[in-house]
Image 1 (cartoon, helix red, strand yellow):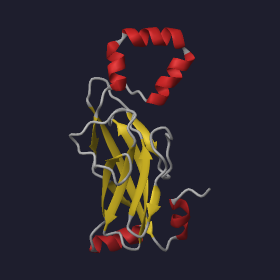
Image 2 (spheres, one colour; image 1 turned 120 degrees about the horizontal axis):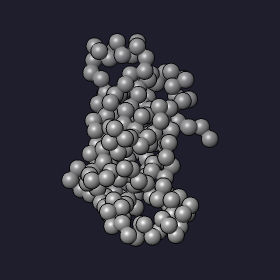
Image 3 (spheres, helix red, strand yellow; image 1 turned 60 degrees about the horizontal axis):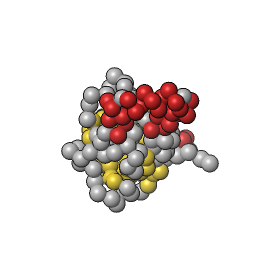
Image 4 (cartoon, helix red, strand yellow; image 1 turned 90 degrees about the vertical axis):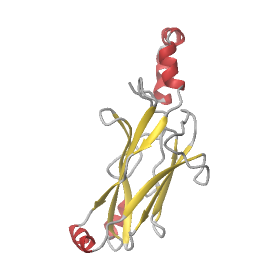
Length: 186
């Protein structure tokens, strides 16, 4: 059972008396909402967009990427797998890649929760799906990194952790279409 703070507010607004009474009488439900959870970050899936790039990378080494989570801002303390976070805690999502010279990265297909019941955070085009959970990533192409801010309010019934999974697509720095589509234009 997934809950986000935003969904909880909608439920309270739509049915304030009935929902509030059942919420107060259900300590199990309230514990799910307020419970601190661990975050298990899956290894980043690296995808090469263009076959020509992919073939030339086979001769070399593919990019390696990691996702680190930090409390508050990106210079805040790193969240370790054993640490627990609360639903209202701001998190910096910080992606860093090495061995990605002459390539541009795009974060896509990010989700939180479980494999069977994922909550999509960032879509296949690299844009946020849930503004209440995460912002669309901002990229620094010169050091092959990106960051985003959000709050992981997703909770799983009877579990004290959630999974976080993302993929990163690489394309040629010379590919104008890739550069245009890489970040949202206002």
